[in-house]
Length: 142
Ligand SMILES: [Zn+2]
Image (cartoon, rainbow, N blue to C red; front, side, top):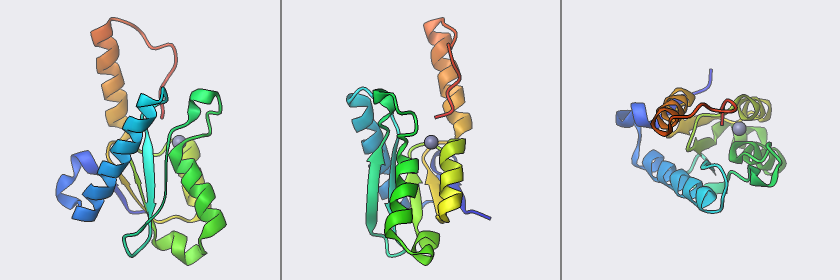
């Protein structure tokens, strides 16, 4: 079973390293938003606490597979041994979508630490739509 931690609801479980890399994910998500993309960022960290790879969402160009978690899975498959992947941690601003969760599992990556869950994201979207007085034209799963 994978080790999942959702940062915002379990802050007491987060180490200083966890908090550091979650802040890094939020900075990457901010960078994505400022560049006209959806605000998501992720970081891959080895078992010694070293950042190996980081990316942000890049779907604005039309390729909706350009999620940072998916890029991490691809990078890990090409650059790390199975043991290195198993002991690595993926930090991410939002819980994996189904595509990224599958890629994570297929590649054999280890622990996941999320700043927010999909349920939190859905609630925030609902609140925003209510404030704006509009109805979403599509569902948002990441
Ligand atoms: Zn995804």
